[in-house]
View 1 (cartoon, rainbow, N blue to C red):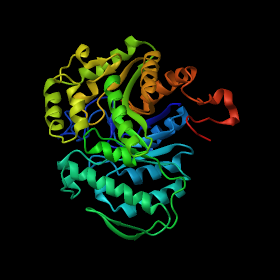
View 2 (view 1 turned 180 degrees about the vertical axis):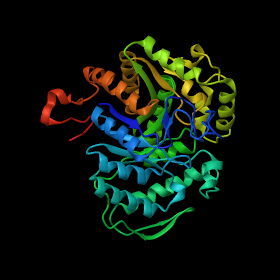
View 3 (view 1 turned 120 degrees about the vertical axis):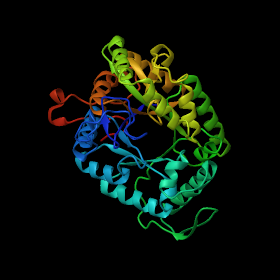
Length: 394
């Protein structure tokens, strides 16, 4: 089992700070007189194309783009970026409750034809009722997961290429059809830590995606989903969502993490924690528990070797980072890989520069450890031969 490396597209904005600009009011960042947020890069197509091209150049297989009211639409943004890249895949996050499953199946089929097979799908059930209501969705937490299960049943049924009927609590479909099914079928990535989420993952996910918890907690999740999938006669692969701060030396990496902390103050952290604490997401609550009270203290935030919970002080969702030398980060990735993690969805602030730190520093070490089948060839050495992708490029 080799490693699949993916990067992240910051379609809600990027910059040199941890502050989650879309989490609350002004994100705790001082604004200039013109009203622009200081130090923040707008998620325009030109900047996102830089990140996508860098990810492709550095050998990442795909890029994840988020979904929500605080970022650009994932479908439209990534299909535009597909025109700026050649091999890079797009892990498009979407919410089942806000569009028809038959329409979603049709969109995926169209996307595969336009991009020549570069679509992956990240199913986001939604753990925040406040944001769900912005989309007109008023179901509670467990009902949302029940609806997701029905949604994915319809999507896979419609992809058969034959008229498909479905009668459920949330969807009733008569003769649902995608006349030209996607080829290949997009892999479905799915995450969720609650009892309601586990059976959905076991029944429908190709890849179960967890946020970056310590290895022993990740192992518990893997064992849980493997057991549930086995009861259904299925096999599920596993992925993890992490940030990275990788440098030539451990001291440099931790100095960068410390600088990110120095941009925060107790009031900013408290405001973010109060907002994030209202989430219904079990995964989000597990992230919050790692912060040990939200202290701005590096010693308390390193919750496992080279695993730093500082990101989650102010950012929702994935709240941990691998921090250390390139060798340290490669070792931690191998540790997760030994547990059964195959897909690593990574990010860092700012996303353009951190992609290069990781791709030029850690990726070659992973190849040396036998975790990658190929590494990007240097354009200085490869000449007209171009670049070779990781995990099933050309």
